[in-house]
Length: 202
Image (cartoon, rainbow, N blue to C red):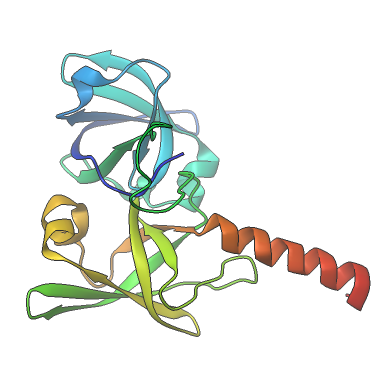
């Protein structure tokens, strides 16, 4: 479980394919604190540390993960958002994030507005992937508040601190991002489908 509050940035130092899997070698300021089998969120994707060599650690993404996320577009030198799993004694400063990406979205506009930034995204809405104004969404591992969701688009507002300390400063129109929808909204959508099919007919 994560909070969506980015802890550090990592740099992709190596990419190695093995069958349908992709091994990602990442350097970061928190590598010395990691342990084998530890879960770390990479752009919102929960991956397990399988190897540590000095300042570089390795995680592996399987085919299903590569299919649902933007990890397969990473290149050596790219920067990723990192967050270690939350401690049970820590404050939940963001929202409940599982690190299980639901889909990707395309950034369609970036607008600077008097010191902050508005990013607008286009995605494929489904009954289970609900967005409500002022609700929560996780974008590339960052817990954010939804602004003006209409049809298949929504925006988020980024404050200067978040812009500087995450990969949002490198995000441009046309880029794809990882989306994780609010788990509470997903449960509500699923329960409604079950109720509708059981009591209202399909």
